[in-house]
Length: 267
Ligand code: NAI
Figure 1 (cartoon, helix red, strand yellow):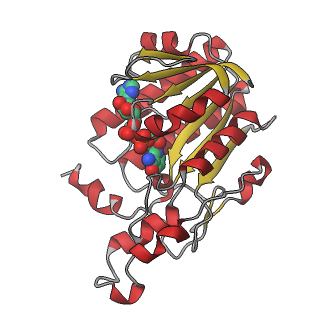
Figure 2: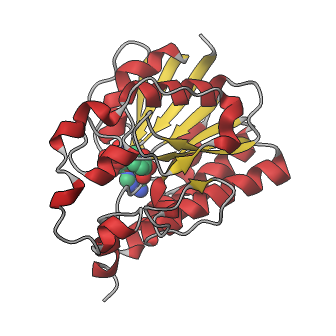
């Protein structure tokens, strides 16, 4: 196997649970970490309870690992305080540990909400300025920027995956456009971990969907070729002619429903 031990943070979450059976291919030992209960460790697994906001716990969590898949944190729009603790302080703690412990590579679960204020008629690539759609998106821009600093200054490599909509099924227009199938995510993780040299790279995590908003041209060298497509769900999504509110901001901006959620947390 390519690595002796890798760490996966956020292992109790939606993606953590779905990815868990697929992680054994990457390392002899997969260390699964979360604030929440992870159940008993299976063969080739270790489990760690860890609050990303706690510096000492994060240092202990990272000890002895060769690479990190960093998926832990707040995954939706929220009040600023929890986002600050998990996504901002948590990422700082993680990279501090990565640097101190000499870990060479991180794969960071970023999000399309770093670019959510682009319009659904824009074609977005990783060279364009971030336009986050809320505190959550801003916190992921922070993670992308922090990891950029750790590459430029300390030579620690990171692939930031701006994950689209990674749930089993797509049921509206936005989900169709941004959908990421689990097998494609596993492929992206494999390429992010095993490509010999990645430096600091931002890639867009989508399957081969019709009408994609994102051009992954800056990450072509990863060789990612999606094998899944949301076309299989197209018959569940109403035709454009039936949309009642063509000016609805959730259809105007790529961030979709986050455009409504953001302001709820700041009145
Ligand atoms: P999730 O919310 O289901 O899982 C996140 C996990 O992080 C949870 O198990 C939670 O307990 C843990 N966590 C939260 N705060 C923590 C803290 N302070 N210390 C330690 N652990 C903490 O999210 P999901 O859907 O599994 O997403 C995983 C990652 O991928 C997240 O970083 C999310 O932002 C990102 N992502 C996911 C997308 C999706 O479609 N599922 C889309 C874009 C990004």
